[in-house]
Image (cartoon, rainbow, N blue to C red; front, side):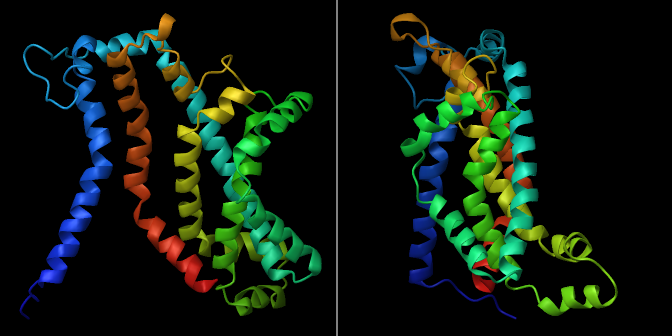
Length: 279
């Protein structure tokens, strides 16, 4: 079968999206290039490839690792991100299943509350949230996991609810008729079906929590430094910044989440589209 030829319209669309890709990837490329330059050349030639004069090898990386205590910050970010995502996925999946299957005025109000929480800007509640976290002793790596659950449950419940509505109720009724309990119905039947949307929810929350600066800074401060906070502390006195080390640490901070995203990205479209259509 002959391959259909691209029309002029198809070519225009291809060029447009190619330009969009270049625009979105260019900042990452610029950071990568400058991470191999001497810090005194980054401001003068930020868009040029490293040459024999500007190339600094791995000096920026070794300097950044030493100044930021990167591996300690990496471990803290990894712990908070993994635990927060597991808690968000587990609790919001059960919540969405319950409020979708149990039709009462209370579950409807609960769903509206979750959806409403998505439109409340973080800046509106950050000061009161910081005070409440301090009073309830949540200003530590364990407590911030619960805070992330609170901020991440709105979107997650919304996505899960749309997906659960598309699961035939007859499957769960068959389990009940065979003597199964609601818990068995959820964990043995519903939860495996939720795999695509669960991976989508996990990816979205990983990218958010891993790169988050403001919430860890306000809640746990500098005692438990995550990667964004550690990179921020490369600033010296009088506004001086070791740009070389900062670029290198930004590259190391980006790599894990990019690898995770590339590994799971095919599930994003599958999960979001399925949730939207079934909802």
